[in-house]
Amino acid sequence: MRIKREIDYLIIWKKLHGLANQEELASFEEWLQSSNKNKTYYKKLQSNYANDKVEISKKDIEQSWEQINRSLNQEKMNNYKKWLQLAAAIVLPLGLAIGVLYFSGKVWHTVETAHQIVPGQSKAVLRLANGELLELDAKDELAITNDEGIVIGVDSMDVLTYDANSQEKTFNTISVPRGGEYQLVLSDGTKVWLNSESSLTYPVSFDSHIREVFLTGEAFFDVATNKEKPFLVKTTTSDVKVYGTQFNVMSYDSDKVTETTLVEGSVAVIVDGREVLIKPSQQAQVNKVNKQVFINEVDVELYTAWKDGIFRFEEMSLQQMADKLGRWYDVDFFFANEDVKSKRFTGAVKRETNFEFFINLIEETTKVKMEVNNKAVLIKAMY
Image (cartoon, rainbow, N blue to C red):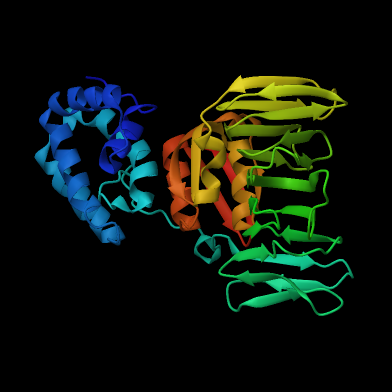
């Protein structure tokens, strides 16, 4: 049986997590029974999955690969090796620590200064109505007060929560820098996850007619249901109108389109007064130049997994990946060759993944070379 990298690594992951449906279980059993090599591989996955806190070292990788390499027919392993590279992209960083990763004869290629680049963390700056700036982090609990000293919200455990009983009619703005993320709960109970390099302006308490916020960048919204008071997310390109639902909006200034991805419920994307309804598992793309709207069926997890601490990529171009990774790791990517931008990557890793591991993984699965100098990353083709 030929292993399809776009499907089977997800089926195996779902099987391990108890999330596979009947069709996926049938595919898994067919794959498992097709060879002893597959059984050996899955047995090792099961063993390591039992303890998702297992740490894996360079020595572990070398020894594990040598053991498997000796026990299996080398001549028939070429295609299997390629699949392991892609499987590791989702399996290894998610805590499974399989101990199997092929790196074309060189394990854990070290790039200068890459180890100094760290993943993002919870951090933000809150601008109050009077212009005062407050740094938000996980170190201490911070009471947010108005000019009269009345508490209107509390920052604690990486979440800024506003008082549901507040009558304050002023606006606050929370800004998340590159290399950051943050969560907040608005006064109506709506939960918001803000991604790197994003900001949200919102009222401390909503009036009686509409709940309106202003977004730059990317955010996931879990809107508290209120049929009498619609919730409106405004961007520079379009507005998103809802009453109670879960959806993701991405509208960075550098992007050519604004994307609204719906998880559940229904929303209306408003462009120049025109309303376009989208359904769950659909995404509306609004062209920022001509304001055209395109509706696509999508895998919503590819656009929302970031809020749960996971990067998910499916045939994503390196140019698109560079934008996302640049914001999270606070680095700048440059391409030495135009054709490199269109190379594709598939996989999923935790957002807390070590940057050095991440770029080695991309190098080996897309056949590119990355050079790091401080916070600049040059991507070149391998000839």
